[in-house]
Image (cartoon, rainbow, N blue to C red; front, side, top):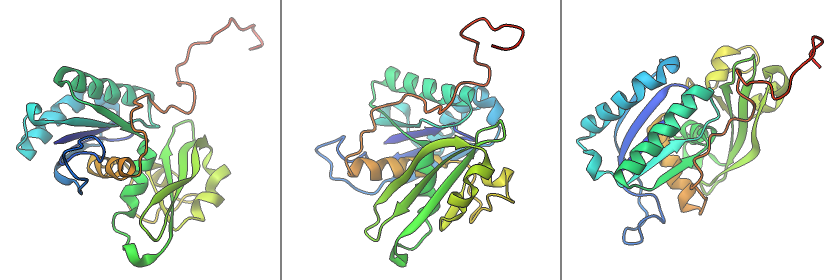
Amino acid sequence: MLLGIDTSGAVSVAVARGELPGTDESAPAAELEILAVRSDARSRHHDEVLLALVEETLQAAGVTREELTGVVVGRGPGPFTGLRVGLISARSIAAVLGLPLHGLSSLDALAHQALADVPADRGPVTVAVALDARRREVYHARYRRETDGAVTRTAEPAVHAPAEVAAELTGCDLLVGSGTALYPELLPATAEIEHVDAGHLLRAAAELAARGEDLTSTEPMYLREPDAAKPTARKSALGR
């Protein structure tokens, strides 16, 4: 049984039956069965929402904490406070229960989520993900699904003003993420997918693990300094 947590935008929690490929040698790789997903869009109240949502999701799935065998967490990018709450909570749950902890980019998860309803026989499909980064910027990355179903990242995660990356992002077959809702003129969405669904986070982790991707890092993917970062040196009145 796996627990998935993502706080890169909305808070999302999922419970699935199954294991990540390669984490249990006695069990063959199989598609995860998502038992329950719960999400809450109050992004500024992650600390108040997350643990209650974990308990609600476990109850909906009919699973106890003691039955969990692993935890998967989204590493962002996203708001700094929200990411910290999600990562610290996931680490705490894994430590208390003695479970392995796995992490992956929330952008990767959202790309897999966007592709979930695209028929496999469509052929190669390109996907762009744009998440609200505040400061009138977006976190973004691009992906391509091949005819064999493998999803690869074709442009690494970065942060820019929407106008700077509009051409390359809108050139993809699919464009999703909370950035599309904020800047629809520049980044028109192809589907109403704004935030990571933790069920898709778990499925993305399973696909990446099956390809041999390293999911051991749970360090937050910030991409830039915090909004409230303290200056490292005294500045003059001219800001130099």
